[in-house]
Image (cartoon, rainbow, N blue to C red; front, side, top):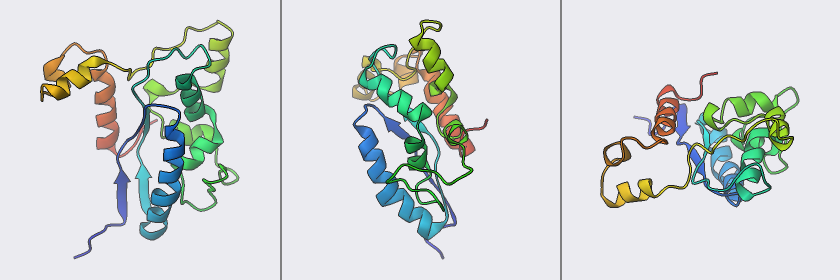
Length: 176
């Protein structure tokens, strides 16, 4: 009986702060890439920013993280590490691979902010979206109470986003 199948999924990769980008690079190049090389189909289902607290209409760590994960080829290359033509260390995708398509397939819609939206935010033409999974005491309090968040705080505004993450995992990825 085989211990491994040809189809594997990695859990959602949640990112609380900018410094995690280095951790994602190490995970992508030392773990995901080799798994894909040896086993074939292994997917990072989604990249979810969480524990956000700073405004994103200013140059903050949260802004830098969100902008990176929504616009940069180097971030997209980490999500595809180990695939043919992807160089996660240098942050490049194979020719013909569109950055927007990779990000659309890995950043959940509630966290997706396209380049033109960043420009509109910076020009004051668009209000910045409130980070969907923010720092909140309710999650920690529910954990300490040993209760699921929906039981502990059924009106918590972040429950819908946790539900979307669960749906992404159940579907095996983001449906565009």
